[in-house]
Image 1 (cartoon, rainbow, N blue to C red):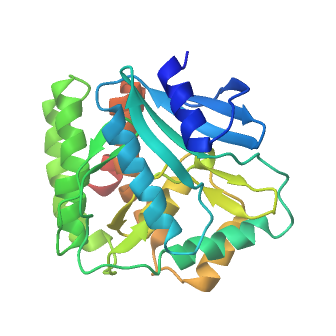
Image 2 (image 1 turned 180 degrees about the vertical axis):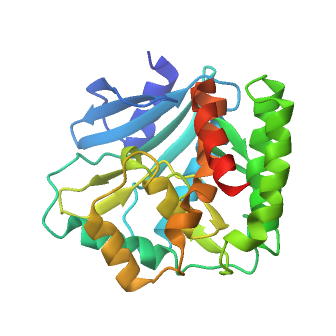
Length: 287
């Protein structure tokens, strides 16, 4: 149920009547609605958790950062706020369309173009979220220190505190950390989407890729590619197009699970211990 105050806010922002709010199923974190008006449809996300406003504000800033690269389409942010204890984010609405033959090629090239946006340090000027979990983004000079201190250790601490991982897992992570200098190629900090799986993109009516629900940072570009491979992978033309535009260093297949470890730990903390076995399997590969 959308609070009446949010509906009134929508009317003011959109300067039109709200005819209907239709729930959209599929998300794990927020409630989503298709907002129908005489002037077209819009997309509304709501959440009543205490930090919903901070979460949606971070998401909006991430979308703006991605949009400013002019590389891949993202929804336009129309409003963010909190009314009657419910946070909300209002975006343009985009219907999933049939993918044209060159969709995956466009997507791969677009991601490669996004990854050409770099920064002096790994991190971001502020923290954000991945799902409902805080994602720290303190600046680091090296990818390895950033990955350990801002990505893996916070997730490890959460999992241990919740008794999802044990002391033996702590020891395995320590051994894994010592291997990282041998695993990752040296590349500059690159702007990444940060949570690029099949549920976070669509094909627009114009046949172009659109990405959303970001968890942005300046990280290693291979993090995005690793996330695309975590749950089955994208079409082969996506990877072929990406590599043609921005070749990867040799050995990506071997180091791929090392990147995926972060996302597996996020899933341990968001959705439960069923992912623990996958975490331990990755650690075993490298230690």
